[in-house]
Amino acid sequence: MVLITQSGKDTLKVGSSAPDFWGPRGTDGKKYGLKSFRESKAVVISFTCNHCPYAQAYEDRFIALAHAFMPQGVAFVAINSNDHTHYPQDSFENMKIRAKEKSFPFPYVQDESQKVAKAYGAVCTPHIFVLDEHRKLVYEGRIDDNWKEPDRVTSPDLRNALEALLTGVPVPVSNTNPMGCSIKWKNQSFTTLIHKRS
Image (tube, rainbow, N blue to C red; front, side):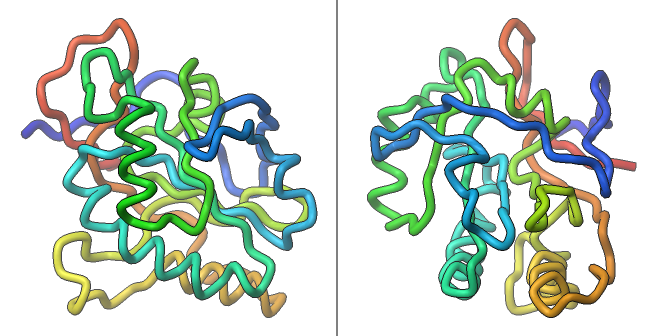
């Protein structure tokens, strides 16, 4: 595995307006964009995929957070932006299988053009973006500080951000280091790469 740092377009900065988008298709057959969640108090976007071990390790925790916060008016959406031609595990058909097997309570959408990932500056899977009611970015980074051992998490960063947002206080830590398999961009050769932002 090779550690890489982000190159190209910068990741969206906290305080910025979220790039709007419309059109990625979900495994439920519907199209999605920010307007799909216009009634929500907040939106949590996870750039993720099927095959990455980091994404798989965090998946149940993300689902649990969705179950905890969706009743409080927070929308969750998972976006797969990987080039599925070279990574067939991330094909739309396999996304549908994954969503059904894991009973995702949120939309799982395919960013076929990769425009959404590029607009947000997502770099790895998973990479989390939290938007407030005005669709300003208030948190960006990881789900928590221990991808491998859930029982040893000491900093549940995404949960902390959502609890702060819903109680009207500043998010205690607005940026953390996302770590995972790099997003598989089209027309780019990859071995197995792991992203860690320095």
